[in-house]
Image (cartoon, rainbow, N blue to C red):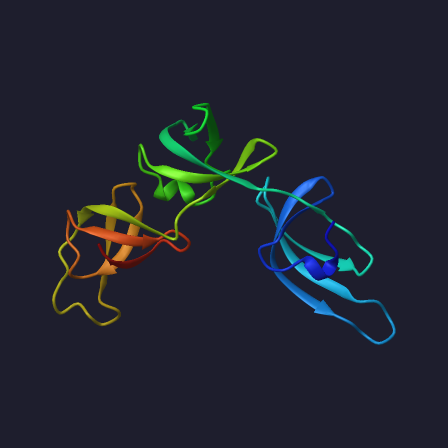
Amino acid sequence: MYSINDLKTGTTFEHGGNPFIVLDYQHSKMGRGGAVLRTKLKNLVTGAVVQQTFQSSDKFEEIRIERRKVQYLYNDSGRYYFMDQEDYTQFDMSKGDLDSANNFLKDGEIVQFQYYKGKPINIDLPVKMTFEVTEASEGLKGDTVSAATKQVKIETGLMVNVPLFVKQGDKIRVDTRTGAYVERA
């Protein structure tokens, strides 16, 4: 059992029958009253972010989030299909369940999934992934009024702002948290 002193950023626990992860917390103690913990939590099943305040007497059930390698197979009509690499079972997720992760999925790619009570709940992408540029316009040499960037399309269909020297066929690294260009691979 966790107390409020155990809830730190990244801690997973069960509250009200749902798994949560702590995104941010602030511990405060005022005068003669008991300590309180103000938190920002993410529901691992629905993806909803909520703010919750806990009293010093509150207790929480710790949970175990299992991580497994899965292979992305294909998408069809807004559903994304995966195969577990341990037992070869297939499952699907909706575009809404994946948030923006669907912008970084390539056919046949091996990614990690978080499992809770044997059920896949969340995709866990690497921070940086490498993609091939499929469409790129020519950068104009004198076009540097603002930052010298242009938009290109990567192999998953996502549009990314990149420096002018990137051309079609280049491989680039993209930050999967923000969708921003990091470097040429």
